[in-house]
Amino acid sequence: MAGLSFDLIALQLFAGLALGAIYVLFAIGLSLIFGMLTVVNFAHGAFYMVGAYVGLYLISIGGNFWICLVAVPIAIGLFGLAVERVLIRPLYGRGIDYPLLLTFGLSYVMVECVRIAFGKTGYPFDTPEILQGAVDIGVGYFPLYRLFVIGATAVVLLALWLFLEKTSFGLIIRAGARDPQIVRVLGVDVSKVWLIVFGIGTAIAGFAGLLAAPLQGVIPEMGGTILAEAFVVTVVGGMGSIGGAVLAGLLVGVVVSMTSLFAPEMAKVSIFALMAVVLIVRPQGFFGRAGLMS
Amino acid sequence: MLQVSKLDAWYGASHALQDISLDVTRGEIVCLIGRNGAGKTTTLKSIMGLMGRTRGSVTFKGEELLRQPAHVRFALGLAYVPEERRIVQGLTVRENLRLGLVASKEKKREAELIAEIAAIFPRLAERMDQEAVTMSGGEQQMLAIARAMIAKPDLIMLDEPSEGIMPVLVDEMFELFRSMKAQGTTVLLVEQNVELALGIADRAYVLDQGAVVHQASAQALLADDEIKERYCSV
Image 1 (cartoon, rainbow over the protein chains, first blue to last red):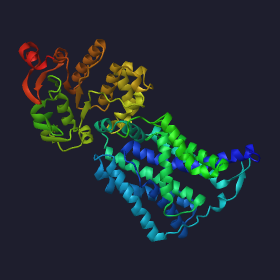
Image 2 (image 1 turned 180 degrees about the vertical axis):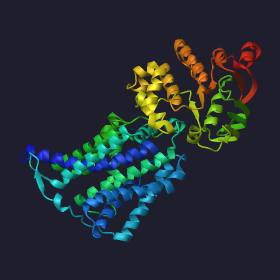
Image 3 (image 1 turned 180 degrees about the horizontal axis):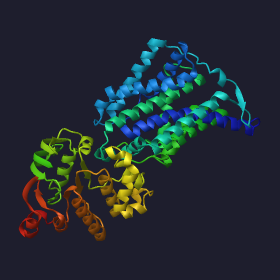
Image 4 (image 1 turned 45 degrees about the vertical axis):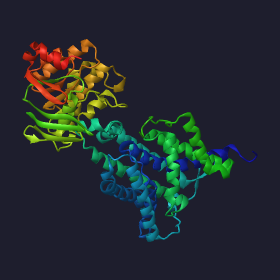
């Protein structure tokens, strides 16, 4: 193992955290929506992809990255609200497979629409100038933009935590995820809560897509890969658990990053190996509740 | 205040309630008694809007409720404490109480109302920041009642509040129902402990196989051993 210094491993660990941060953002939305609505949102990757394309479009008409950071989640969130209200709401009470099939189909429609509008080939996405370059983080030079991704994720997580723990609406969400019926009896119009939760989840997905764009560019298929990986994250963390999504997202990011250092050809497989091990030891995931799907 | 007339309800294909009619006047304690499966819980659920398929009429303060969702019925002043209590896991006692206010017009007076309810339920006051499901069954039942009372409903429906609770707590709870009545809250009570329930009730309806088979003042029923024997003995 000559040449694998401590510093190199530490840097790779940080790279894993930046990768994991994107997984975390993607998976908390997926988890929030599943925990509250019991909707497995197969279109989550498509919202993520559209988020990146909206950013690309805004920049092409003269916007900048900082405007995108605000405008993209708002636009994708509003789009999510419309999708819940028009397409998903009529399917409540019909079992878990109806919204699953609907969102699965919707993701194909969204990808195809983007192909028509922007073409099948991908585009590079420039890192904003001020975030280019690298900074010394003690163990070596680390790309500034990746540090920004970790920081932005931390800010979103903190805001989400404050919202869930400190506001009345957050209390309704926490209670409603456990027992929608009692929340209804206590006077809450649960369908409004579901609408807003779907909007928040998709807004975060759009935000994650935008953050990921400078790292990997944008292509219409970018949502498909991360969707599969994010399902691993939610399964490992426990379906419906936000804390689990955070922990598992970072863990998956680090595992991928470390295997690509030591055994690059195994990086993609390592995620699923991790999932298999966790499922054998703890079938409900880190923080999952057994029987949630039934 | 509450009028139920010719109410039918179904669980899937099974016809759970047939032609139920009953009424509750402001300030009364009315009790529903009968064996397990007689339709008492289903009646309360239908009044609160938790049954899928219903037919007939439920009016509350003059408004027809039957096609209204549960949250609208809450807003009109109806409260329901389900048999399973449904204390929310992962929330503290205080958060469960706050949940009773999230949809209420009184939400802005949250701190004041929680202090008020804590004075009525000293057991809860001591455990305010404890996770609620770690309390004893009796304490959880108190919390379920407190959570329903905190928004000051006009009519509160209680399903088997004494079930599985220590006798000393049951006495405390029924004392509370008396004082709720004294303060003007109307109560519709489902209770398996017939003697105890009739002891505080004004009137009672006897249900059997999803239908009302008898109604009388609580006093008359207490004396009527034949009816009690026929419809309430296990």
